[in-house]
Image (cartoon, rainbow, N blue to C red; front, side, top):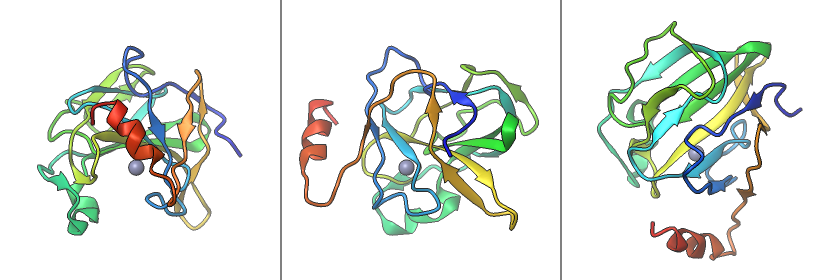
Length: 170
Ligand SMILES: [Zn+2]
């Protein structure tokens, strides 16, 4: 069940798109998450029209220390859209958004900057679209994008991801 809404890429088109969906990192129910490799400080855009319903921008720490897996270390925002779909943007920069809960946003509006917050090794923005089940639990769904995005699925045996990242000077 791919998303009904057609989402934009959450950053400007002039940036090279490297989208990775690593199932070892994104465990169910977040297996449909996509990490876009981006320089730190890139403007992050709302992927669709909606309303800001969650915002956490207080973390100044990020890196590979396992304790950073806790949600309190990740700066993120959630935007609610029509069709009961929600988009989440993670690893944002400390206090990089002037938006408030309840603000309306349109597709393409700048909402924050990418950063290094929470558990991460390579600068990227985490993006997923989710719905909420009858028990109130959220679960990710495959994302329909409004333009072509090639998503790379690394696997344990391959070091091609590493090579790919090197080609991006990261
Ligand atoms: Zn991610």
